[in-house]
Image 1 (spheres, rainbow, N blue to C red):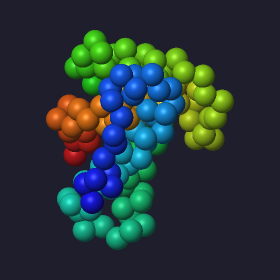
Image 2 (cartoon, one colour):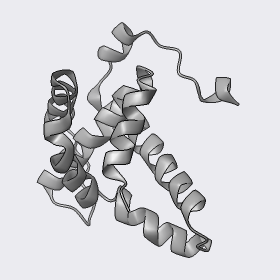
Image 3 (cartoon, helix red, strand yellow):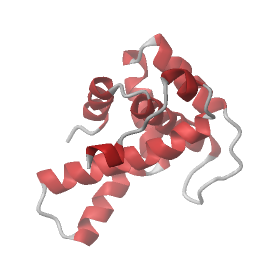
Image 4 (cartoon, helix red, strand yellow):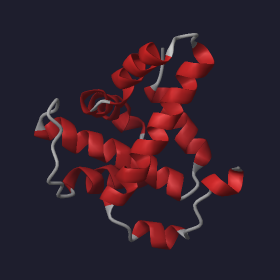
Length: 133
């Protein structure tokens, strides 16, 4: 199973990817983390699990979490966030404003970048900072 989930791209190649690619995988990685956390820490039924997960993964929440942890990021991570935030994206969810969506994309880009570059210890630290009970 571990091979199935493993990304096999050198860091140099990941750095050349679009920040939207980082955000694409970051969205999935963060949602999987949140879902695992909820299943491990609660006994909620599927509908309630979904309702609870949305609190973490919606754009407004991700934007707020990024702002909360921003000062704890390294300069490299801040650069990844900047690139993610400034990327042109022509999609806007109906329950979010442009600024929230830009910061949520930046948050997802950071998660995706850390995942793709296999910085798993740092990724876990970020998850723990953003998913406190």
